[in-house]
Image (tube, rainbow, N blue to C red; front, top):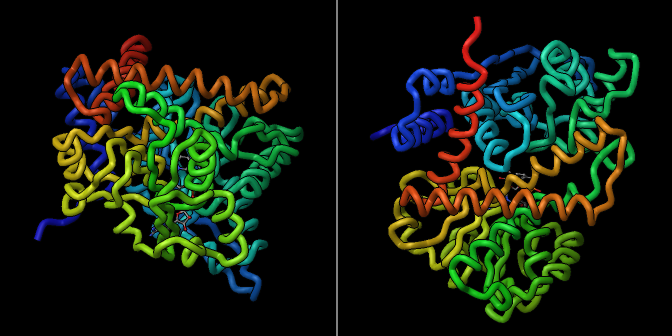
Length: 416
Ligand code: NAD
């Protein structure tokens, strides 16, 4: 039986494919295969019961030819250096696709936050930050939240870094709460970016957005906000789900009512008037637009053929496998790949960093407008490549991202 590809295998294979399509300089290809720096540390903390536990932590800095490294820090028991390396590589391409002056990085600590107290998580965060002091910084590497880290985690990182510097340095991390330098609109930014991409895709397909039926997998930050924004634009949200299951109503649900219900009950499941469905059934529901906004590896070789949506907008990272990509392309499903669709999150992080560096604070209307300009330009750049090179949107996005990074490396040259 063949072994499933690891995220790093997939990332390197994607790079190989686009390198060939683009006729990439083999020397630059060689550079891009490897992260510039990987730091692996052991993070010891004293647990609430007095015991000392040690957790593996790492920060992988893939490439900084276009600007300081940028990428989230995740806390999850399955964190490995290989996985973090793949995620760092994808961040390099994503920042280049949305054309912000950052390179790519990712970090993680292999721990289970569900089994740790808030004090223990704070301990891990502050200790881990001291171990990263030499390699992070506003012009070096700017972390952000990822799986099971949030604004509070970023505030602890900023506080610890600032203590060492002797002055407040909000620009060392993004995704902070607004009171300590966060940006207006950050919470909705990823979803809004996804919606801008969907709007552009419907224009290309000459399909009205108003009245389009939408199914959304995942009802967390991105899924709920995407549902709400699309509903306000006149779409019909026919299905949503979370880790416990999904709901379906062909007449359309009102996302804010489902949100209120989930706040009380803990899940969207059993929402009054809707039919219960599984997460797999949600993917195959008849609809115009499908938004996977939960986990990786959801659209696979064995279910891709049953997807009925005309547009698949990847709000989540890595929801579609490379084999499923081929099936969707053959079925003429218009796929908006993750490194384009969800790049509104990192674009908004960039706005936060700029505001922090200039000690300014922009209003939501301003951040949303800037986001729209970035997302529409990125979508049109990727779409133009897909038409010119006759490739799917995933390969077009990779060609754009890899191409921009390769060009920066070429201009900078190799020294010494
Ligand atoms: P979140 O934790 O707020 O929400 C995740 C949602 O997925 C929850 O509703 C959860 O119940 C659901 N879920 C978990 N397991 C599931 C399963 N097996 N089947 C169906 N649903 C399941 O996370 P989020 O911030 O909304 O992120 C969602 C996705 O978007 C992730 O892939 C993340 O990497 C990606 N993303 C998020 C951002 C951001 O700014 N938050 C930016 C870029 C990419």
